[in-house]
Image (cartoon, rainbow over all chains, first blue to last red; front, side):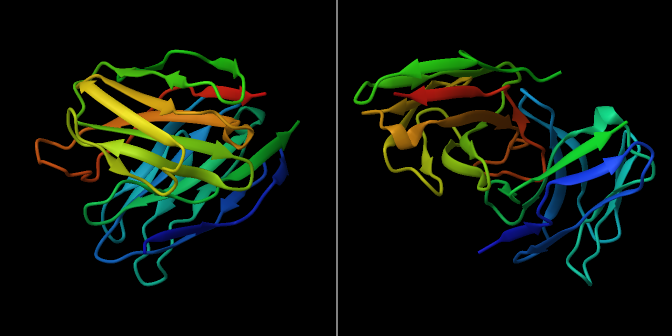
Length: 111
Length: 119
């Protein structure tokens, strides 16, 4: 079945450091890919999405490019802030099934 | 903005009780979902619904049931609560863009979650 694998955390970075959270997927057909973010004490929010190969999703300084050849959708940010501390989930929709989530990666940014 | 509202942020119940978790969305979405979130396991889909009175099992339906009598409301029921059902429960909704039983590529909108403790 469809699946998403993302790097295990926790990830701890200093403010202004470069962030990469790896995400790879297995899916039949042509999935749409998503990154969700969960801030402490809250539900999940959509961060960005890409619906076809080579699309780049971006929001709040975060970017991810849909790479069909490597089945990847890595999340990047050039300069993280303390307010980016959260849990990040990679997810996909493929065919006619609901979202499939990765297990999440906890990011802590220290000043 | 889409609003998904879960009735309680925190809930404490006893083993064997029947527990109801309520979720309401205000965007006329066809699809609604219930997940539980546990450390190290991520989000796991319990049940989902693509229309009123319709439901489908997710990955971990055992010990749970659901009810969708109105389009905007999706209830999760723990028939006889057990300690292993202590968890964070998240409700979500999404549009099917008018296509029946379609999850399309529309994002899901989540509520803030209910942290349920079973003692």
